[in-house]
Image 1 (tube, rainbow, N blue to C red):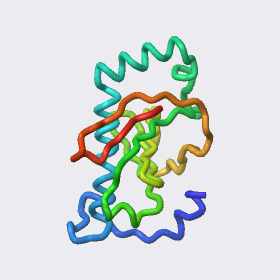
Image 2: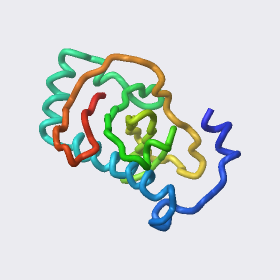
Image 3: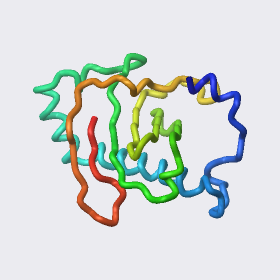
Image 4: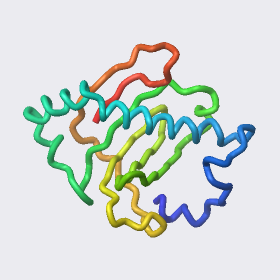
Length: 154
């Protein structure tokens, strides 16, 4: 569906050069903030320990790889007024041999991390399917009232 719609979308510029007055500025920045937050959480010792512990009980945590990747991380958020106007957003970022795909829908960010070695970013049109309801695992809840992040699930 995204590939079919991509040709109808108009180009409005690079995300990092949007003026702060643009209606897209805050929503796009929040998507990148969500990606940074999840990446930092996944690298934390607490999350690594939890995933290692749970992978011995739930083998599906370790099973996904390559093109058959079905595991994604859901970051629940309490969003501001600017994001309430956004129905859906998608972002694909290549960094250090990895592909980070962020999908936003109904106050949740869905993040998929894939191997990006050897991929040509300009030719890559793939987006993951996060519509399947597989098994889930609650990793963390966040109680900071000043933070938009509420909980993380793979």
